[in-house]
Each structure stands twice: as C-alpha cells, then as structure tokens.
Length: 147
Image 1: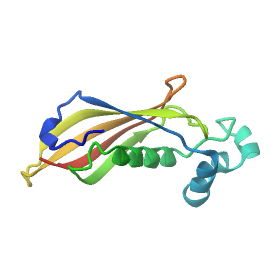
Image 2: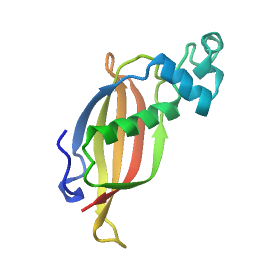
Image 3: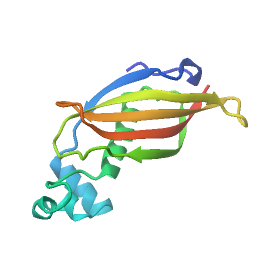
C-alpha cells in the first residue's frame, strides 16, 4: 500500500481497504493463555457451555492483530507518531481460523492545538468476517500523525 505523506492528505469519510488476516487457532490459544485466560478462549469443552457456545478469539487479540495489520500495511508508516487510546466494541465473536477483512475509515482529523506539526486523527477500524461480512471489531483509535 502506498504510504500517506502527510495527515493533511486525510479527510473525514475517507476509507482504506487494508485486506485481510486470520487468527490461527494455536495463536488464539497462546494469546488467551498469556493475556486473557478465560475458559471460552482456551478450552473447547468449556466454550461449548459459555454464552458463545464455541471457542472464540479474545477481543483484545482481535484488536491487537488489527493494529498490527494496520501498521504492517504501510499506510501510516511515514506519518504515524503515536497512539492516544481507543474505544472498542466487539459486535460478534471471532472464531479461530476465520478469515477477516479490515477497513480503516477517517472519522475526524484536526491540527494539534499545541503542536502545529502534528494532527490528531480518529480512525475507525472495521474488521468483518470475509465470508459473511459479520463485524467482529468496531474500534475508534486516536492517532497522532505528522503533517
């Protein structure tokens, strides 16, 4: 993907298709065992008796993978300075090995009041299953970007 040269090239409503990724079952289990050791992320049998009825990836894993996917896409490689938080929702669970697609949407962009060489962007990450388009992550992240 062609890297953006400046935050000034962004405008609200712009969107970028970032392609897709998969969270393999072994990675889902590893992440959960280290960072989110809930039974429905770790154990097939326990997951059957959970609200999900099956093993599902941690929402935190889905978000982390999405952030990594965005960075690896190269879109922000020349302008990303730092993050400033995120609002996360998981409208549906993500099963291991389920391919997903990711879209990035510019929700808001403004010049920093204290640092004119920087912009503050609110970027929406929309991650959906590739097969059915079910949204599994809807997150709005704050990014500090070079102008």
